[in-house]
Image 1 (cartoon, rainbow, N blue to C red):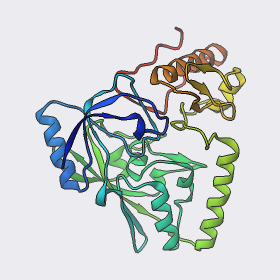
Image 2 (cartoon, rainbow, N blue to C red):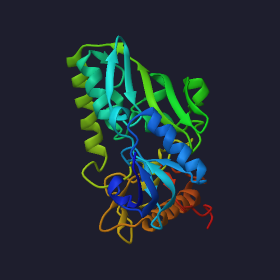
Image 3 (cartoon, rainbow, N blue to C red):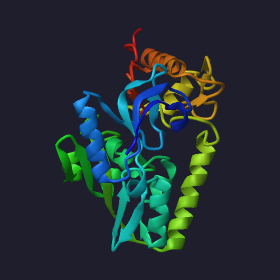
Length: 294
């Protein structure tokens, strides 16, 4: 397995922004992942796994870490009885295709999540009333101690989060699904995709939802819309005119532009509603948000 240096990460993220990785590798097996982690531990480098780059904001300065992009058997998916077994890097679209072909349902909601099976475990991804915790059987997690299977309880899944630490890599995932007519699955997916297309900027470069929905009558998107933030722009980034909980790369956006928009959105939401919005997007590299009152 080759370790590359100074790889630009912007082309691996859906926003299309961000600096270089100090080190970059493409493990294709669990053993590769173990070797990569050992290499990083020896050099005291943190580990970052980027998946499809759909929930990441990478610092413009880059990241002083070993960045992993899974490949090979770690991006495949297959069905065995009522189990969908996927590599941690398997795109949700591939997993859904395998499940539908086998007549297995309950994964349809993932059509609205442009990420991977492993990324979904890390953030307990969800949409339209369902999430990973409802269908996950177990996940194979690799860290410097080796590989071990963890249950949803051991993973500590809750709303858009897990107990996984930054240096842990989800190499394989098992979902327990339920028999369902393939035509019914296809119809449900079409319905959800139409809803997503109508409400979200699916034809723009974004990193997905910016903030988690707060404990409030309004969702994060509706709250920011009420604050008049739709279309608000800083540098090359703008809050989507279609959905206020998305930031678009309007023209050469940098990570610092997106962070500035997020800071302004949090400030206004706190000022208007007394709510401190928590970001859903994962920061990679030296990125921070100021306190809401500043």
